[in-house]
Length: 135
Image (cartoon, rainbow, N blue to C red):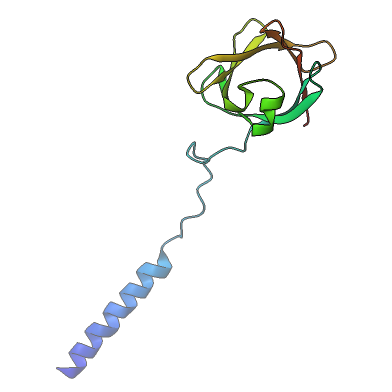
């Protein structure tokens, strides 16, 4: 009886080792999943107010829709233009202009590709604001 039990145990262990070592190990999956976050697609700008001789840094960040991206500006941007530090989105209008808006969607500035600058404010009309990429 002991011999039979020992033989069954040896057989079970052998079968276990054979099934473990006999199988091909799976490699790393070569498919890149869409769940892996991409690198930040942001762009930093120096925003200047020529009339007030002030400047600050802001960033247009990751896309949140096909036309819009996140936008952040520090509290020092209040000296450049009132409400600018509350800006949360950058929306391309498709006509060469973009709107920088607050969390409620209210426009703070409307900008357009500028002469010698990346962007210039066109609305409000009294805004002497320019944006130059720091990247």
